Length: 94
Image 1: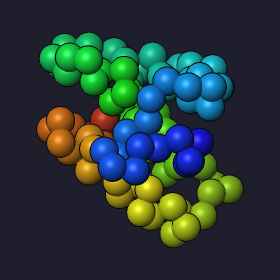
Image 2: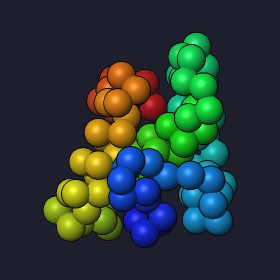
Image 3: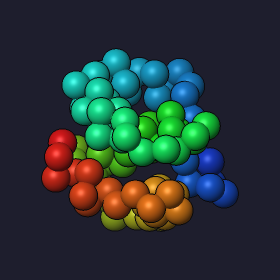
């Protein structure tokens, strides 16, 4: 999953790993999708939803050492900020 992040922009796209993550977290994925329903994000909408899901998993799974993934997490958070999306605000609704 970590290796599928675009290192330049900080997003994730739909691929085999993210499809698997979506299947494992269908409820969270649909909640994220509904939260962003009203936002006009254009062609980036799917990548933004996936980025939020990946970040949610990285930040909330107990078996992941967040210190090791700090750069990846920060890059993903920056990606969301570039679209004026605050992960912490979305997290409250999940």
